[in-house]
Image (tube, rainbow, N blue to C red; front, side, top):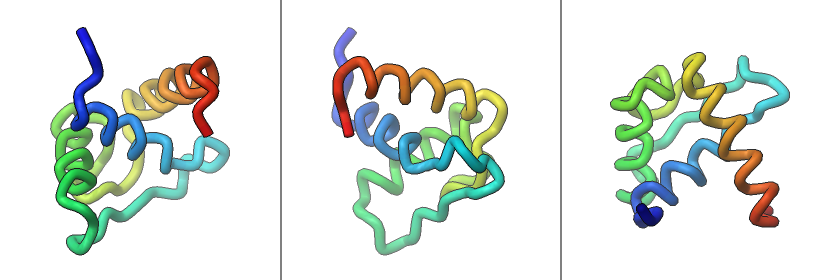
Length: 78
């Protein structure tokens, strides 16, 4: 299975969350790129974020962020 463009958008969006302070959420504005809005809605549908436009990470979202950060580190992403 390969990463699709939408899944890469979701991974990048997860990386926008601050893992040092999970009390800080994010807000995806209606003026954001359509791909980012769709990624946020998809993460909400998966139960990883609290709101369709961002909000806070759920417990599952925190776990997903840990995995994404590990993967990004392995791949040398910045």
